[in-house]
Image (tube, rainbow, N blue to C red; front, side, top):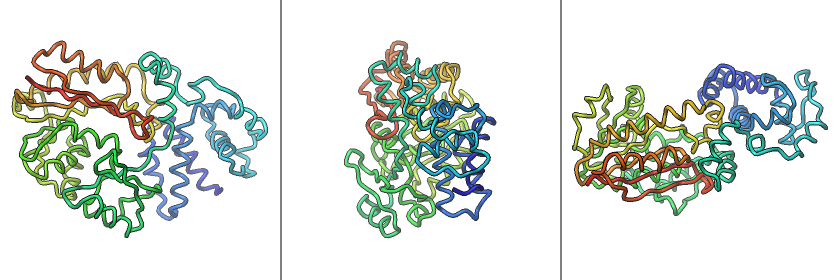
Amino acid sequence: MYRNLSEAVVTTLKTIFEDNKYADKVIEKTLKQNPKWGARDRRFIAETTYDIVRWYRYLLTVSGSENDDYWSLLGTWLIWREIELPAWDQFKKLNITSVKDRFQKEYPLPIRESIPDWLDELGNRELPSQWAQEIKSLNHEAEVVLRVNTLKGDIITIQKQLTEEGIETTVNSKFQNALILNKRMNVFGSQSFKQGLFEVQDAGSQLIAPYLQVEPGMRVIDACAGAGGKTLHLSALMQNKGRIVAMDTEGWKLDELRKRAKRAGANNIEAKVIENSKTIKRLANSADRLLLDVPCSGLGVLKRNPDAKWKLSPDYISKVKILQQQILSEYATMVKPGGMLVYSTCSILPSENGEQVKQFLASNPTYELVDENHCWPSDGFDGFYMALIKKK
């Protein structure tokens, strides 16, 4: 244990919880400010911070300390992970024997799985038979999954090149072009990444683009494209043929998409900012396929964004559900008669998923449900929902 690294963890936790900043951004900034730290030091800070954020409520209960005593949280985490507690003043409040005893106690699910009470109530209400299993799975650290860019090579060739660069991966037959890292590492500095041979994309997320059943030569709209992970996947599935209009309300996200598309060699993508409702109306009945990967609670991706459970609120989820229905109703008009759309979320709540689709279909009889699919966190990856809808 090094004091400067411990101080970095404590400062990072303080910024996340008291300044309400996103964990990934705070950690990234902390590491950038200290370029002399080695790979092991950087990994310690990132992994320790994420683990304490993930288990915040549980650790707080066991430590018996105040909310803002981040040193005691760190000390409790060290005891839990069986790392010797340094004889520093900051840890003097902790009685190691008492803390170890409290770790042996049985706690109610919201404390044991470290989530707010309101979230436990919501999960039990919406997924009564599954909630305990799914929230337990969401506390497991996410695996790092790559999606092979088939515009630049096949999975076997690209896996071999990665191996030559010291990046060991495993194929999962359930996912067509996914490679799972055998060991967590920074892959963004690799030659393979710079050459556009892969993107980092969770296996669950990799199910969505194929669900749209695109074909080369089609006209496809990805209307909530963000930074374009699924857009790039669509381009690969279309073999760079046809046209993809990638849209978002945030122009800076589309700038990132353009950079990624250039690296990937995806040349059939046009990025377009949604300025107002007219942007959508102009594209009425123009798309063979439409992807609506809508804003959501993000409950399916808590493995990689554990701080989200402390930032979410019932009010936010209520508002995002209104937005989901609005997007589905307004944007579906862009599909041609006979065309299809996919509505998808990275949530596991039925009220954001199947119930939204039912509500849309009840109000829009010219559309019909073809199929729907879930990727549950308990399957080992992120949680996603997708519904394939046809315009009659």
